[in-house]
Image (tube, rainbow, N blue to C red):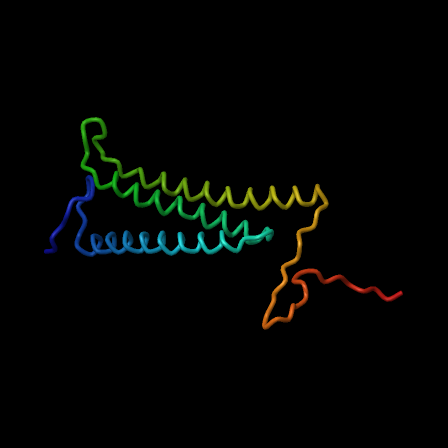
Length: 147
């Protein structure tokens, strides 16, 4: 028989304990990796709407990761008189937070796109300088119609 450890109100077998520890390690790794990505994107974001959206999305993607780690702290607590069934439903809050973060990314992209359409503004095109020669604009192609 396998040794079990308490996980709130539930006792977890060794296999699930290892999976939980592994999930926590991956979450911490992902938070560090995403933080580095956020820093790099912040340094090169410029005027690009796509880069700004990626930057905001990366920042918002940290929220569910922290929510998971925080929920684990509460889920592992033993039941109390105030909460006789434990706090296992706290993990559902993490799912809600993840959904709201995704909604925020979509709303940000939609608001920026609609605002750009209403202003009628165009963003400067990105240019690349390789070995001292400037390349053409990215995304500034315009069709030439036959007359």
